[in-house]
Length: 79
Image 1 (cartoon, rainbow, N blue to C red):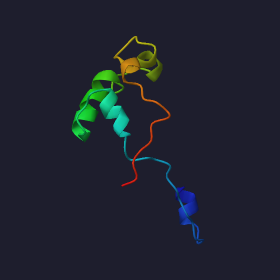
Image 2: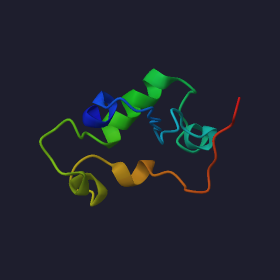
Image 3: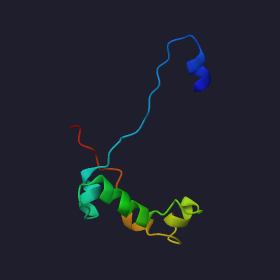
């Protein structure tokens, strides 16, 4: 991307990121609608700051990631 932006041509860059979580996630996992509460809970369930592979969490060897899965059918509100 740095190389492309260094060129003298107009360039459009898009980022595919929701910047939010569906409300159903908070309701299902009984979390307050609070970003810090979400981050604290996520860190307990998915301690990926440790020197581990994500698969360790998915497989249940570390953390409790299986308890905090979402649902691909949940949608975000466009407010």
